[in-house]
Image 1: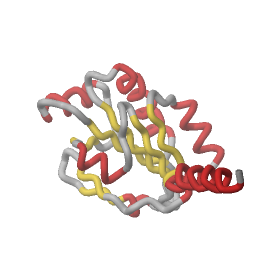
Image 2 (image 1 turned 30 degrees about the horizontal axis):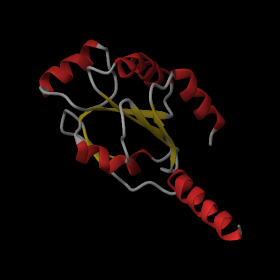
Image 3 (image 1 turned 120 degrees about the vertical axis):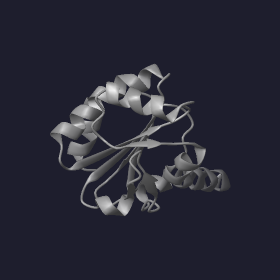
Image 4 (image 1 turned 135 degrees about the vertical axis):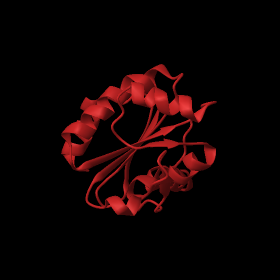
Length: 153
């Protein structure tokens, strides 16, 4: 019985370890060729949102991410376009959605630099110290994000 409890405790510790550990200092290059390192944004919350043009919940999130970018100077958002066939079309799509934050044309290697992306949308939120605070799979709303940021995890 004791061994089983120790085993369960170890599994739980491993499952939640990434949320308290400092993030690897990944770099994302946006569609304009500008490189953005996570460490460049110390002091700000960083939101990295993985999306695709064909993903309805992804598209529902974009206006909320635009609004957060407009209203919160303590937040930097990055959108990572995934699974596109034509990069120009993906960028035009983002422009048509009035995206006001950097867009990264991503692929599996891009995703692996940030974390495990098992479905779209997936959103990673890093605290001002650069630690991963949340990995959210599925649609996330402005209200959920604001609640998280105001709690100051």
